[in-house]
Image (tube, rainbow, N blue to C red; front, side, top):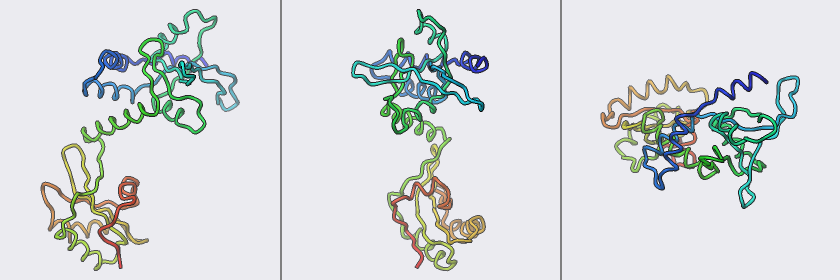
Length: 255
């Protein structure tokens, strides 16, 4: 328990606190302020007051998580940016509050679970009092994705607005010849300011993707390559590829 307390007392969020105060100080925070806040909250851990009931032989805790309710009766987990802020909120209590550390992701997952009685969590409920419910968590997630795309950390796969025949025709002819592709989709992959045409292939069982992609690139894609929008190939077995083509119409289907 002493080790847990040391970990909790080590939680500090000066960047998040500064960003939260900037957010609260403006009715319409500028995009830079919003991004600073999202960047800080996604990395943050919080001090959450709990009532520890027991610890089993494996060290698993049985506990109640402290919460508060608004006037409408909706319950919110209390999440503090540091232990000192929790102590100030608990001033006058007969005993020192127990607490554990939870990341932002931990708290979002917790309140998203089916049957969770909490509507969300309140960060520093008695001072800054920023509420994170499903809508706020979604907005934070969307802005975080946008920031990762803009920085080049994450790529986004989208449908191409048009699929030129002069591109699909030689690809389809090649697929008919090699008979290794069940279906194929033509998409775009964007990372920061770079965009590529992306051929997502659903290969027949037993076909080696590395061998296929090397031959496909040499025989078909290189002769058609465009410096402004070069090609790349991805197997549908990759999660990002499978998600991006879900309910999309392939430009090629093996006959």
